Image (cartoon, rainbow, N blue to C red):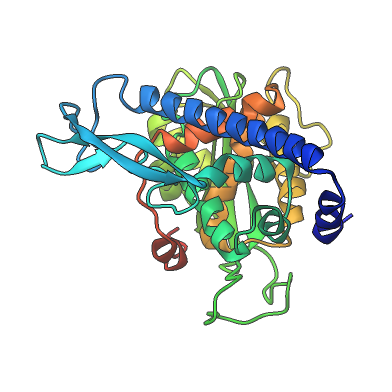
Amino acid sequence: MDFKDITRLLQSLSPADRKKVHLMLSREFDAAESAASRLIEEIREQKHKTGFTCPHCGHNKAIRNGTFQSPYGGSRVTRQRYLCKQCGKTFNDLTGTPMHRSRNKELWVSYIELMLEGHSLRKCAEILGVRHERLFYWRHKVLVALKKMESILPFEGIVEMDETYFAYSEKGSRKVEKPRKRGGVSKRGISDELVCVLVVQDRTKQTFSKAVCRGRILTRHLEEHIAPRITRQNILCTDAWRAFKTFASKRGIAHYRFKSTESKRVKGVYHIQNVNNYHSLYKRWLSRFAGVASKYMDNYLAWFKFLQENKELSRQALIRSMFVAACTPSTFETETSLRQARFAA
């Protein structure tokens, strides 16, 4: 049954029955709006738990500065405005969030729900009545915010570290650096045609994942990205690549190495099976996107990490958690900044 069929069915109803349908749908929309309002209230509490914090300069001595009317669906709602006494700029509870200056704020919760259900951009666009190109940028505004929420705490105990590789991709670019056959690379072995994704995980499942470079990972990459989180109190488990050995030796870290050619790759409690499993799960999950641009790889890593860390949550709790987490850090990404992004590693 499509929309035209539903329209004809509604027209066949009596005036009384049409009124009942109208009231039922009104209650549903009011409930959805009320749920979104509660989520925005939770965002306010998270962002301003140490005071009214300015998203522009980070100063937490801002003051209330009146209210304003903001469109929300077919109605208008009252929002609080704040004034930062440090930089003099005004802001509201949604400034510096993915919804900042969005014309369809009422659709964001529904879109995150569709994201988590695994619908394609075109399917989401069909359901929400928004162009799929716009939803692509909504997706990455959310993922950039999730990426900013990643932990910087030191790892505990045994730490597993390993890398995996993906073909470098400029999917979506109109000026491809080096065109090649889809899914293939022209050079054999590990070369700059591959992107190296490093995954580090301790036994408490605290995880670091990032696309660190093109080609082979070097000691300097480990020093840059992971050194502050690994200390001499840790025990490092890696494969036999020499960059890992040099990194552990320089920092005086106990180190267990496992060669891919060895039949036995477990030494008591020491192994790298957890990170290898993480690689496998991530590649399987990523395959549903039919390839992603390398410049967005960190965003998808942040998405997958969020799902892994919250896989015990119920569906509604997961939607709430993702919405609030995406709106808590200050981010001012725009369609232009996302489109002009480059693979920095």
